[in-house]
Length: 337
Ligand code: HEM
Ligand SMILES: *[C@@H]1O[C@H](CO)[C@@H](O)[C@H](O)[C@H]1NC(C)=O
Ligand SMILES: *[C@@H]1O[C@H](CO)[C@@H](O)[C@H](O)[C@H]1NC(C)=O
Image (cartoon, rainbow, N blue to C red):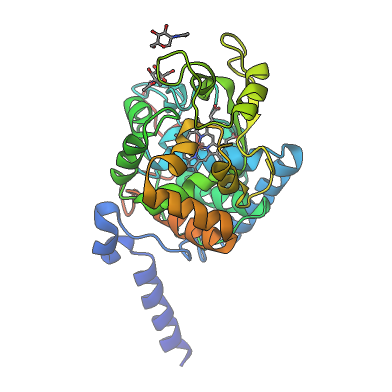
């Protein structure tokens, strides 16, 4: 009895730990991720990530926003493979210097701290890409947002793509259509675009990311008229025509540290901070209706957000024998110098 049970367990875990065999068409060529991936190899992994995210939040209330954004900027550049975490070295040109990341992406030291703790607990087991996905979920939960089970089993890239980072991540002054096209290129749709943009219910933006709206949105010397003009005049005080590029502003002016649906309420009042935020309400009917739905119904937003986060987290992961489990997230295991 005990023997046959053991055999059964061995057989089951063989199946469970052979993601290559399970490579499912549903996940394309990306391979198969599942929430129980570390249940045997590192049972405390999720608890460790959560503890360190909580500690980081206690020290800096903005940190959950920064961690959530890191996962997004990772997944949109050749998949969720932790490429964003790599520093310059050998042949690697770091994504940290791309336009979307330079002077803006942050939280790297928290990811390294989590990685260090996980290497103590279970060496060379938990990927940096999975740490990013778990930290994004925990960051959402700790600020009051929804929770979800995170599919796991991503492996880490051995390279980065600076051009991918510059081109594939939407810019705050992109048109609605360009942003939607960039999402579609990742297998994400309009519903994912609107719900995931709800991440801007927490965190900050620098002046330089929305200045154009305050002074010369369309090249005619006029401000963006889809921005509440009183709000615009307040913003201009700290975001002058020139200088103050790095000055920080809340993306959600009402509840900047709370993951809620105020972001969507702001859009309806023309108080979205970024052009890419407001266009969700002003440039497309389907997207406008979703903004209205989420502004009315936080549950609907939370439910879709969780679904879309899982979908984003499934973008082209490295599985099976591809990639590696980095020991330190900012460099590959065998860097060529
Ligand atoms: C739809 C297209 C998007 C555009 C154009 C965009 C653009 C931006 C910009 C310009 C900033 C401020 C950067 C700065 O000035 O330092 C920002 C911040 C942020 N973004 Fe997005 N974003 C988009 C979608 C997303 C998505 C899908 C997520 C997450 C799933 C996300 C999460 C965040 C968070 C949490 C912050 C605040 C980060 C912090 O305070 O450190 N964004 N985004
Ligand atoms: C968007 O901003 C970038 C960087 O500031 C600028 O080079 C570009 O011309 C802007 N694009 C549009 C369409 O305004
Ligand atoms: C607005 O932008 C246009 C096109 O980029 C430029 O030619 C013009 O000088 C700018 N106007 C002002 C008032 O800055």
